[in-house]
Image (cartoon, rainbow, N blue to C red; front, side, top):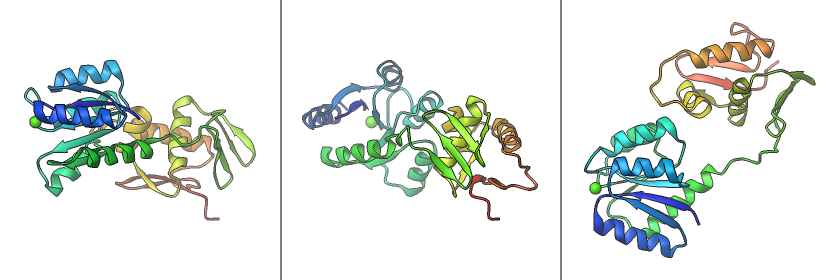
Length: 227
Ligand code: CA
């Protein structure tokens, strides 16, 4: 069971989904408009939001952008438009999944459970190892070749995020959103600056990387040194 917020202006759809999702054991709040929905989201901190795109006071996309600026709450978009480019845009803008109208409560519930499962935090205590680098999220400590590395909280979060995705390129946009929790589209140099500090503490340089590899125009990857 989850605490859900349904933002949907159509009274019939809203009532049907409210009833069906409650019958499935969820605690559901509902809002018929975007701004009210945003206020409810901030006040109630639901586990997940189901967001209709066509709302009377504000486009659902705008609301998604506003939400993402302040919250990482999972969002499933409910839309009448089954258009691939639109879906890609929405997922890029921070939606976690979408359902195309008409959908059944069972379909929506399956998506809700899948998104919530995906979002479950990994074990806080699990130590991550990349080569000779060990990251302990419980103790928030890092060792490299057995020696402690002193990191600021932000540097730790950055390294931890990269370590969770070790071997994969992580975009700066994702880092801004996940580590700094600032909205997509921000273009400041924060990530670059922190990466260079982190690099120095790991005893490497951008020219001779060992663990931190910049992939030009894409992002950065943490991986075990090849030699
Ligand atoms: Ca609508």
